Length: 170
Image 1: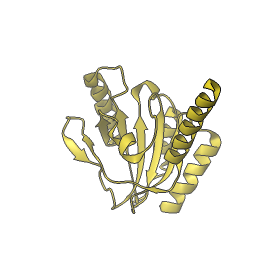
Image 2 (image 1 turned 90 degrees about the vertical axis):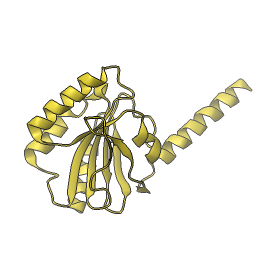
Image 3 (image 1 turned 180 degrees about the vertical axis):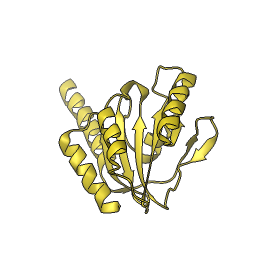
């Protein structure tokens, strides 16, 4: 009887995780923080297609080569696409001031916008599931639909799937 209960619990978790992954799905703009800890909405939500890197600082090296490749090749550059990063500080064990300092340096280097999610607002509002210790790549279209999401280390197939999405929305 105990095994059946465990199997049902695992099945329920699997079903809820699968539902969190069903795409496309409508999402709403949320209010998080800028690097100065001021409340802010996601920029250009509903105006442009959004490419968002949602990163746990402990997983910042996941897909680092991919993010540098995107910067260097300008593969996602388009007036129709606005890309930025959001740091998941709630799950980080690094001090908040340290994280914001690193983000400011990166922003100064590449001019990218970096925001802070200090309370798992984005995963909760959008039903993303567990984002702890993960690099999460998101793409939201102008209509506010989450059309692409991958968590963790991107496979070559994940990268190709992402390139197809951004090419479609350029």
